[in-house]
Length: 136
Image 1 (cartoon, rainbow, N blue to C red):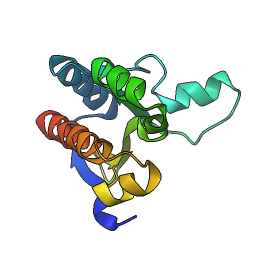
Image 2: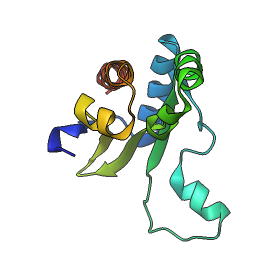
Image 3: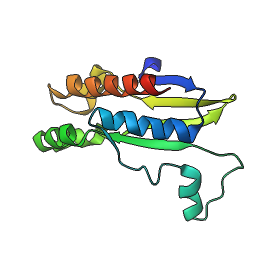
């Protein structure tokens, strides 16, 4: 993995507002946030009696484009290993820190032997980054 595979940016919006705004923008482009009710990790950990430090506000935002994902995994279920896409948002340095791990075409090809998949997945990564940029 290369350093450029980790997309890093920040927003002046609070974490929860960024997450909600990203959900709205994602829907505009045919994406969904699978875990909208469970993306606030402090709440998720609390449900399992796992304490977190005060102020812990990590949101793990799972983004999917169901129509494209269904076609892609229907064509080759091996693709599923790289299909979950999470945008992380958390407080840091007085701002909302945003992270998104993506893979380049060579890394994708090394994981899934499927000549069409790298271009398709990198296109989706680009769309997710564009949505983050639109929201932040």
